[in-house]
Amino acid sequence: MTSVAIIGPGAIGGTLAAWLAQDPALSITLCARTPFSGLHVETPDGTLTASPLVLTDPADAVAMDWVLVCTKTYDVEATKVWLDRLVGPHTRVAIVQNGVEHVKLFAHLVPAERIVPVMINLPAARSAPGRIVQHRDGFMSVPAGRNGEDFVALFANTKVAATADADFVSQIWIKLTGNCGTIVPALTLRATGPVWSEELEAIMRGLLEECATVGRAEGAQVPASVIDDAIERFRNAPEGSSAGSIHADRLAGHQMEIDARNGVIVRLGKQHGIPTPMNALLVTLLGASGSPWVTA
Image 1 (cartoon, rainbow, N blue to C red):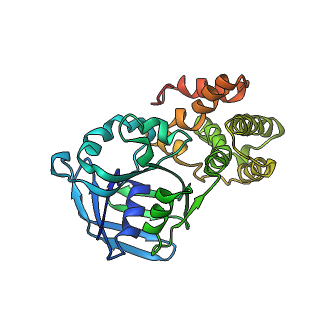
Image 2 (cartoon, rainbow, N blue to C red):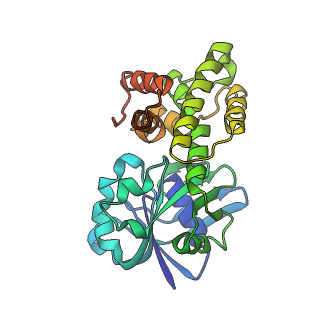
């Protein structure tokens, strides 16, 4: 039996855990801050329930075959106490987070050759510990190679599509390009559709084009269609619609992943000599809004 631990069983971690727990060949352990009784996840294919082992004390953890880190990017250091117990000589660690710096963020905690960066697109929301709604089918991408292929195999019996991609760099930058514009509704606290204008479109397009340009400098292939498709989504976003985790986190008064979503564009842009004035401006404004966030 393959043992899998999930650090951070929130909306994403809890949904992945519930799907994996349906496979009798997998043993699932959840590493959480507070105890809770089981998982109840409403998915497009019906309701999943599972009762995996829930640990709240790292001292109770043992080495696993796989560890999935599903925390926010600003909680990297908080995972150390768990990783110190969960990672054995042959453990692989999948980093299921936003952004493009998965390996860089964890290389001081786990041998880089055993880190599997994961690009995930899985819209889900948690209403209480273990209580989650998965809004639509999700998919994941990981780098090609043995580690990536073994990760994909974990999800072979689930409805979460996973693929190993030889051009993983492009996958993570395509996602970031499509999502970096969510900083606008996070700042305005309005859906973009009802307030759309030529001026707002220019701002949104500037954000996305800066991201795509930096991504290309990082070696990614980001087609222009990614920008056009994202602009259409923002143009048609209805009032009351969620603009993603940054918007939701600000509404809830939670810390936001601004650095992983937009600050990284500014930082890497500077390294490549690429101006990113639109992203830099909105990162600064959102930071000055009084909302919790993390600097680069």
